[in-house]
Image 1 (cartoon, rainbow, N blue to C red):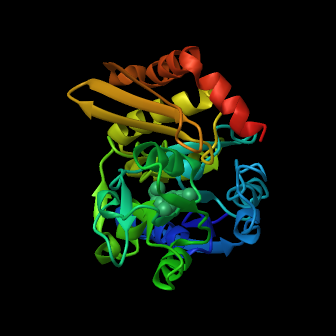
Image 2: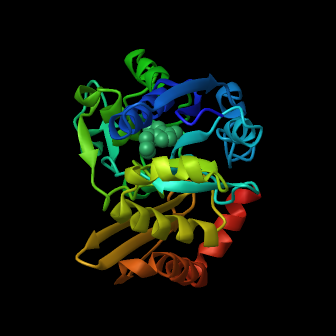
Length: 309
Ligand SMILES: NCc1[nH]cc(CCC(=O)O)c1CC(=O)O
């Protein structure tokens, strides 16, 4: 392998390509002379578009092919949206770097209405995230939630077709794709707790590849790492993937990390919330303790029902 080359395995969706291009540009800026190549590929998750993800075992659907490419030494790194990264890594691969977080909030997107509060009785809201569905239904049981799949552009197209009165997307994806003007309003973390890792990009590589690890190191953003690790630790303890009604969001003020978590059922009739705070360097323990707290207050029953549906 050339000393001056890094190959990035990436999905082909515009958002995945943006994230890979972002890492390429950062690496080439920081390391003059380094050449970074993109290796775009399709994943199972891109192919199965009609089945609710919770039912096809949503964990890892979008990353497996990328990981095989790294293990077979056809690629050196993969760039992921942290909220799509499974909790376990295959032997020989690990998450080396977490980059600075973009806006973590959910965004309300509509051509007619400015916010959820403005939606008339019985309006149709598009999302395929059980987490978003749960929180919307908890606040507005009258709204009709309709499944919405596909990449960001496809989802916006379906809204423009008139299939929905509004849709909910991650603000980060819209901002990265320069679609900010489509955001009618940002939904505060209080009103819709984001998914763990939402808005953060992580970089995976072979754990024994010292050359690549050294080149990646300057992209690390420590505060984002603490926040995302706290959120992921909560999720891991709850054994939840991206497609279950779990929200987790951490903020840091000074050295204190405050993590808020939520588990609910898809129709929003039950929502269990909790908060934990402590030193940021104990991020993982804080996440685990919040998970224990939620489990002890009924989250276990809710999650079992979702997985066994
Ligand atoms: N589940 C798909 C996905 N994975 C990451 C993002 C957005 C960007 C991010 O959270 O970093 C999205 C789209 C969405 O939820 O609207």
